[in-house]
Image (cartoon, rainbow, N blue to C red):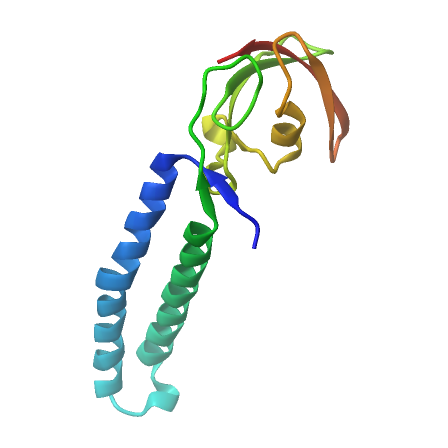
Length: 153
């Protein structure tokens, strides 16, 4: 099992979600199953089938969260000029003037709309270990993209 890097905040968020699923959500699904069973013939009971599917989804998510949290390694952002987990960077394409700000995060935290890129992604991986003023490139479906690092926080 490989370790999954994440922030303390994300670890706590996933722990809360797991606790909610194990307690409240499991109980709700069990109640729905019990109600659906009381309706009679299970072979033609849509409510029962739906409750069983919901139960499977909840159990699958619990298993996934347990695996993620078991392999989690908490990474605290450190103020350094070398890009790593938790670093916020401003980059600019070599062939353009648009500036983009990204924060390097774990896979579970990635959200491109919020400017959070996973260290597993081509962009995140290309940024790791670089410094301000470095130029770098990475492969995308549109071809090789070339950028320059303007700022590291």
